[in-house]
Length: 237
Image 1: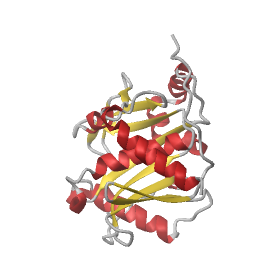
Image 2: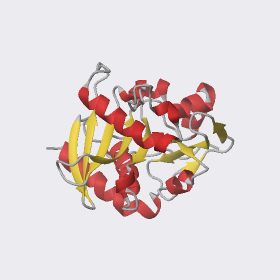
Image 3: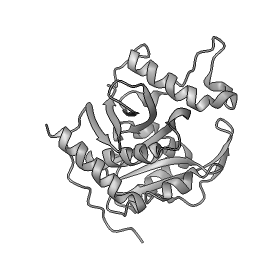
């Protein structure tokens, strides 16, 4: 039986830049254009930051090249929203998460994992379409910023931004071995049965998860709501 139709929250007009403050963090939400190039300074900085965290002191050597540079080049970066968290307005990022919009659905990691047919069936079951589903990914927190609740702020920011943009839902790939899936469940995400497998790139078992607009945001309901309200206020200016 199909799930009841979701009613997305009123959406703001698409925006390219927004800065909101939450729990002492400055959250910058920036969208790179589809036509951006690999030499864009912002893109290089974001990729280097992600790669250094993902490198994890050598645990994942593929994120560092022979020249000692941290590298994490993905096509999903172009056209995506990039959310960074800063301790002050001028501080370097302490954490990051990417929000991929529906224009890039064909490149979703979740779609690649499920396959086109199962991915469409998932959307159909929730009366959603490829035009209104987003995918958060690459959630990373620098070592110096861990233990401060920043991961929760970033995860809430991605969910709030998607909802502010009118998403019917979000889909994501989560690691299982380190309990990332349980972290997402605290926001109201649900595991998609039969999607768990071992990913040699990340040396982790991963699974697909989804959260549909209108479903509860779990124990982080207030946090998601606060960031959502801040984003819509900023985007309306």
